[in-house]
Length: 81
Image (tube, rainbow, N blue to C red; front, side):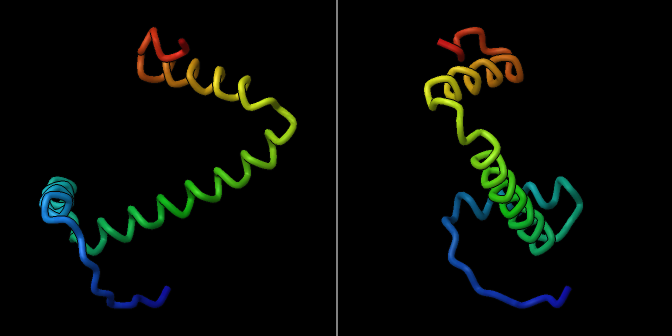
């Protein structure tokens, strides 16, 4: 992969958090941001796949199952309500 240097504007609070998170991971800010971008790309690909795979299921049913799964994962009993 060929790297490209970029300049971006980020809210100061978000930049402080990103620098701190990168230090905690013992990585550079550039590597941290690149990883975040790659995760976002994978997330969008997953969303696109799920949209196709779940095309015939009513939205209300998807919402209910999503809330239930969220509750199961994060332990929030009221998430499905």
